[in-house]
Amino acid sequence: MKGRKLYAVLGLVFLSVSALLYAVHYLIFGDVHHIFIYLLGDVAFLPLEVFLVVIVLERILARREKQAVLYKLNMAIGAFFSEVGNALLADLLEYFRNRDELSRRFNVQAGWTAADFKAAADYARNLKIEVDMARMDLPALKKFMSSKRPYLLTLLENPNLLEHDRFTDLLWATTHLDEELEARPRLSGLPREDLAHLAGDIQRMYDHLASEWIDHVQHLKAAYPFLFSLVLRTHPFQENRSPVVRGA
Image (cartoon, rainbow, N blue to C red; front, side, top):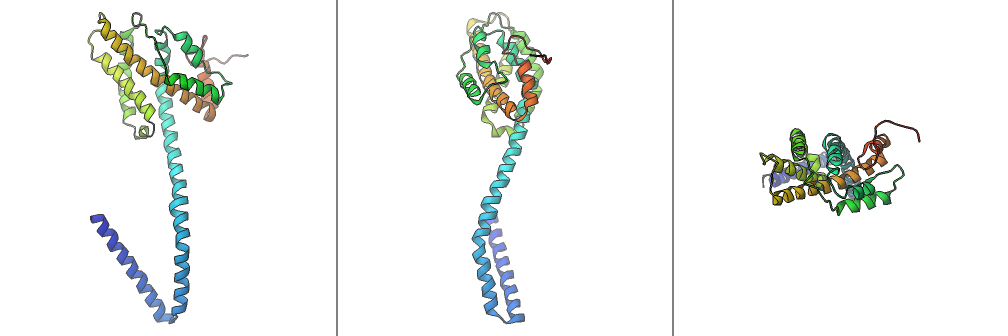
């Protein structure tokens, strides 16, 4: 209510000032015809001015702001994979029974097209992982997740992530797995049902991780070829990965 009253008062003040200035104009020049000619011209231009300022200019500014937010968001996603995601993609892959199929589906190549990325993304969003919990090194995973906890919590405080629901879901799945592991004082001798529960948490996180990774790599291919080149040489879904650049 206070805001409405303020706007009403401001409107009356501006109208009064305008009327006063027109009155001064009439007192000085005594030409009502001239006043109404320019008044009608100003009123006639008003819809065009509203269109240019409110619609065109506002949309341009909104688009620029959105691009700036997406740029910061992509930086945050890239930092996440450098700090946490790439290591999880590689380390957990070793404990999947169907890792050969995953490697074949996600083995990004330099010549991949939009159709190739779409096929990989569709597969990632319906991912079925067979976790070998008998071989899974849960203490090592717990230690790694615990070391990255402050960084993950910092990412969750980033307001730009609100623009990307899927990446936020990935962070929640990752932090939840960390909480599950941290809640267990011992990770040896766990009952079969509990291991199945942890396997589900790992699968949920890896589903989000692989899906977001494919989208991120496609973005790098389009916008940052030099970063995409490093991904091609180091991603875990290939037989012989190495950052060293070699000849054909």
